[in-house]
Length: 319
Image 1: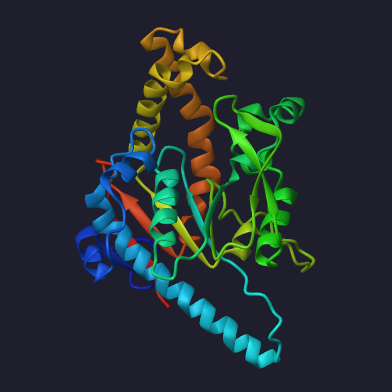
Image 2: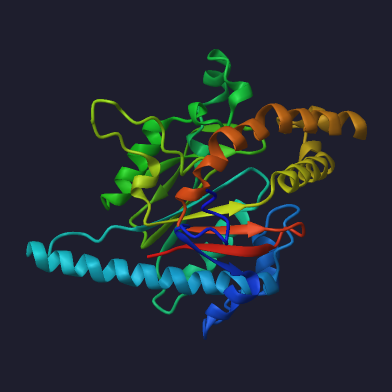
């Protein structure tokens, strides 16, 4: 049984083509400009205003309904407990998917769209990169070749952060990661202070981990999510996008002498491509198959992309 097959009788999802999905936009206004989209999209990601209209405005409308329902439930719980001093907790949206599939663009576009709702909610965005163990620790434990795998993260710090956010604590800090140095920046943090909505993006955010046999409660990151999105695409396409992005970075960011990957910019094109293929096969493909893809069915919404890097199908979990 493949529950993600549109023809599967017992699937917990409803499936829509991109064209069908676009109709759910209704009267949701377009609040982004082409220049803003240019600023928000990642390298090699062709998302434009038309894609925002087709996919993201309907998604914005759907999320608005979920946030409103969450706020109503909060007020009902206040009345149930007769506790008016209880603080409303942020609505947390998790975004998962492979490297090079477009998670960052989706997260940034959603952040801007949601912040421009008529209610003007406070929306923050955090990526899990800052919660990676430092390169020093990874090297010490022979994990540099497993960077991005579940064991390469400070899971305790991740759970403490999300617990703090969901407990409506003030000034919860998240470590900051540098893609230039390919490492966590010591002593640098991003402070999150009681947002209305938090978008939490990372490749393994839907990873459940191992279940205890003794029945003890073991928290998972997704336990703190109110809505989860998975960005999906065929494995061959993601492979292609990863190699294309690597080769583009070789001509741009990798040329910076301070870049961790500067040495790759000095190689011939064939040698650099061979390095990229090795990184894909030995690290990113393994992580996709072992850890990321198995979490896809745990999402509330799946955006499946086609060869042009644009969404072709949307799967929404049934209520």
